[in-house]
Length: 303
Image 1 (spheres, helix red, strand yellow):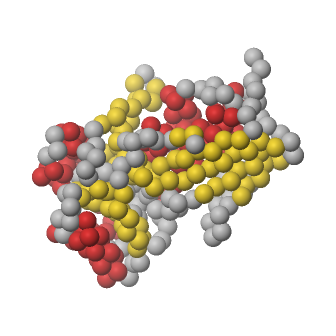
Image 2 (image 1 turned 135 degrees about the vertical axis):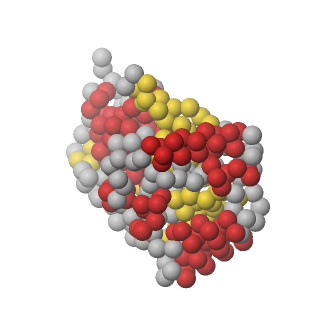
């Protein structure tokens, strides 16, 4: 079957925060902070990448958007001789806000659109999980909202979970990078039964708390024993910042993804929570940026 290819596409992909404390590798929340990618097919052979000033990303085959787009082109059986990739980057790199997932989803969605939307979103998701290695961030980046990822019959599947629109997500983004690979390397290969049971109870409690707006339960629900205690050593001031945010009125606080960003759910008291996070990191010698965000409900979109 012959495939035609369009000339240009512009896509927008949201930032994501994974885990939310207890939901290690299964929960992801899309946020209203975006990367945008433009793919343009050219008659001139070769693939080119244009980066914004000050952004340190590969401009060759190691570029994740490039890799994802090429994977899809090859899957559908058409690879354009020339392609120009232009990036607008607003999601901080290597901070636990899904920058790599945005690149993977951006490349797949853009290439899919150029080839006439050959694959449905479930097929795109499977390809994204294969590229990323775990499903939490890519699922919410593609689908939007709060997602629960799981496997059934060796297939990656997901559900949308309720997330109250009145909640603000305050993120404190430290001015240092932390790679996902390194943050995973500090985790134990096995956990105790007690810790597994602890996290199972918290996930159920978190879903109940969000669905029923039981904000008094969020602090307990977002507690975790599978990853946060081990990663605390990688983020100076993390434990104190979580304590300070709760004292300032945060409803729930957790490491965003593998860090170093912290996330706080708020319903009011935004400025007090932001100040508590900022000042605590500052006391530990860490500069950080504070961003109050809302949940994104659209996921990946073609503009």
